[in-house]
Amino acid sequence: MGTSRDLRLHSRVENTRESNQLPPVFEFTLEQIKERFSQNIVSIETQFETFNLLIEQHKIDAAKNILRSQIVFLESALDFYIHEISKIAMKNMLEGHWKKSDQYRNFKVPMSCLEKALDDDETSDWFLEHINSAYSESVFLGFEKFRDQINTLGIACSSVLENAFSEQGHQEACIRYGKKIIRDLYTRRNQIAHQSDREHRTAEIANIEEADVRI
Image (cartoon, rainbow, N blue to C red; front, side):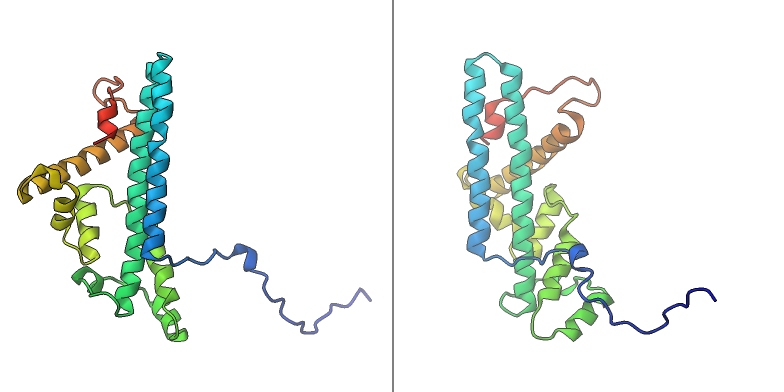
């Protein structure tokens, strides 16, 4: 006879999927989020030292590439900041700590998340995981996307622009200027990141000045 097969039941091997599981989504305080954003901005500003050094060495093209990288990193820092604020805002709305916005009330949650919520009624970690996943591929830098996401947080976008660009004077001027800055930076960021900062029609590299970054 050939070797008999072992048909006995064996204990299930536990924790075999740990290496494939994603790390947990961390929840940060508003202070921690603001601190991280500030650190990103400081890091970007320090690149002006490299820019000035290259200018002194008459390496103009290399210096202008520093400015281009700063625009990309500025937009990246802002987008990540909005993502982090959005996660903590939505979670706080769920838990009743923040006033619920209309966008929050219409936010869709799949049945798989609802099942997790029913299984774990002591925490809202399941919701934080879902928000992180839902927003992970979103970009909030175009003005319309930016406006909608700020409104989702229960904050009037117009008041954000008025505060951010108060040097423009009256409310309408602040809002109008803010919209232009947001749209122009996003357009330039895309041109740099996706087209090597070249114009589609002519393939010529667009000029860039220090003032374009220090808006």
